[in-house]
Every structure is written in C-alpha cells, then in structure tokens.
Image (cartoon, rainbow over all chains, first blue to last red; front, side, top):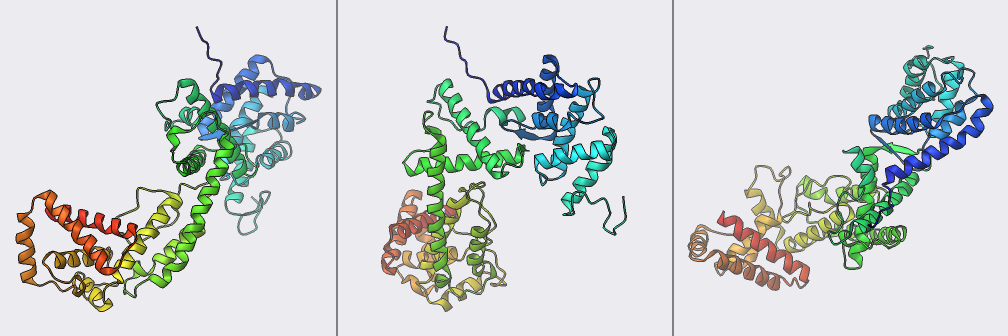
Length: 157
Length: 289
C-alpha cells in the first residue's frame, strides 16, 4: 500500500519548532534552565493555542526561540518557574501584538517585555501584563513613545 | 474564519478537481510557502505572525496575482501546474498586473478630455474617483482589492470583478458610454435627463441608459435617434409593435436597432458595438418585465 509522507504545513511547523526548542537548551542550560521533551511538546501546542486564541497565524521560526533566549538570564526565572513563565510570556506576546496593532516589531516587543519584567515588574507577570504592557500598547496606538509613562498632560502614571 | 482551514488550505479550495490529492497538497504547500514569503515581506521582517484576517487578505492577493498570470497564458487558477515554480509564476503575475495598471492609468489620463459637461456631481467626480483608486491601490499585497468607491453607476456594472481588472473594465465601459452620449447634442441630452429628475445635479443614476432607451425607441418607430424627442404617438406605435413581437423577436429587433445606431454614429469599435448590443438586450428584457 502506498504511504503518503506529506505533512500538513501545521505538522511541519510543529516538528521544526520542537527541534528549535531542543537546540535552545544548549544556551539556556548555562543559566540553569532547560526544557524536557514533554515540556517542549506542551510549549509547541501552547504556541498554537495562543495563536488561535488571539486570531493570529505565524510562519517560519516563530518567536519561541527568541523569547527563551531573551528571558533566560532574568533574575526572576529559575528552573522551578521556567515553564510557567514561558507559557505566560507566549500568551502575553501574541496578545500584545494585537493590542499594539502590530506596530511594534517582534524583537522590540520581546526586548521591552524583558526590560519591563526585570526592571519594572520585578518578576510579576500580573504587573507586566496588567500595567506595563497595557501602557506601552496604548502609547503605541496613539503614537506616543513606547516608553512614555506619562499621560497626555505629562503626569506620571 | 476557520483557523485550521486557513493554515492548511490557503488556496481556499479553488483547485481543479482534475488534480490528484497529492498534486493538490503540493499546490497547497507551494501556496503556503509563498504566503510565508509575502507575509515576511509585508511585515518587512518585523513580525513572524500576523492577524488571520491580514493573512487571508494576503492569500487572496496571491491567488489574484497567480490568476492574472494564468489568464495571460490562456488558463486560470484552477488549472495551475502543481510542479511549476510558484515564485516565478507570482512574479510574472505581478508583472502582468503592473502592465494592466499602466494601461489603466493611461486610459484614466485621457478621461477628463472625454467628459461631457453634464451638471451632475457623481458623473463629474468619476475621473477623481478613479485617480483615488490608483492612489490607494496596492498591487503588491492587496491586488484583489478595489480601493475607493465610484459613485456613478454604469449601465452594465463591472461589480463582479476585483482590483485593477475592475477599474480597467469600469473605465472601458464608462468611455464607451461617453462616446455614445457625445454623439448627441448636449442640450438634448441635458433636457432629457432633467425631465426625469427633480435635481439633475444630485441625481444618482446612469445617464447612458435613458438616452439609449429613447434613441432606440425612435429608431424602432422609424425616426432619427438624434433628436431624443419622443412624442405620444411614437409611444403608442412602439407599444403596439412591442407586444406584436415574440420575446426572441423583441430582443433581436432591439439589438439590430442598436447596431444600426452604432453605424449611424460612426462607432466602429467591436467593443462599442458589443456594449450597445448588450444594452439593447437588457432593455428589451427590462421592458418585458
């Protein structure tokens, strides 16, 4: 019986993403962080779930690898909360891509998320999502500087 | 939109039933890769993801562009070659669309000189509306979209078309209608149009249609079409003849009258004749109903 080896584009992407995440362990392990195969599988599915929930579609490498590379040296992430934080960051990333009307490039948003997570939210995902990034996206939508934390009258938030 | 469907079937099911499942999968994979490339270009590499609605629009534009190439070689999108280089086909399609765009801009450039001084804001705004289209039209990423809005309706609408094909066809038909109207004394045209509306300036309607209808009617009762002056006895005679004819005969006589009128007017282009013949057919059917 003839067998088809053709994969759907989604399946191909998932395989590629899983391999990339395995490769990131080489760097992140230097900071005491690594993902098991089960966690990688969960993260790959999480990515698609987040994309589906936010009504987005992603091609190519995606942002998972960039997220892991950027956050692996955060003082607020350790082996105990690594997976949980990454899951939240994936959700936040796609959510705020929408909230910013896609006006903030991926690399810039990830860098801003890292900066706010470490230096303003001090490891609090609630603060990061509920305050810092909401302000950021509002500023972006209205054409202000992304790191402007004052209102239209110049008052600090 | 179905999320999974958008991911696995970016062609939207427009493929020929003659393709095997394996061939269809290869086409879908090629389209998917092309969509990935175009999306990356659209975002200038800044974003690896886009909203599904945006991806759907980009996908439709890709299909529109590939179809432009297919049509240029006498085929269509449903018969696309699964083994062809899709990037090359897309580039050729884009070149074809740019040719059509240049052709449309050339036609639009001569339009102001062909406009009649009919005092109606919708008619007079057509050149500006068309220029707005060309200003807003994005042939690279949203080639299928008909940017802008043209307020003046044609006798034979081009609404079934999209993108540059829509605007070029609108232009072609609009110019045919203008050539026809220009064969009459302006005062007679304005007088006829004014009789049918309380305010010609703000009237929303096609001007070719009433002028064509009256001129055809005059021909059918054996009078010159150019006066645009139809009287009661003409109407009575036409009504009598109209209902003596079978439906097929009615359409035939209307078309013959239209072609005779084109000859009298010195309209020699096949496209003009075809347009007038179609207008006559539509009129004959419309009167029946």
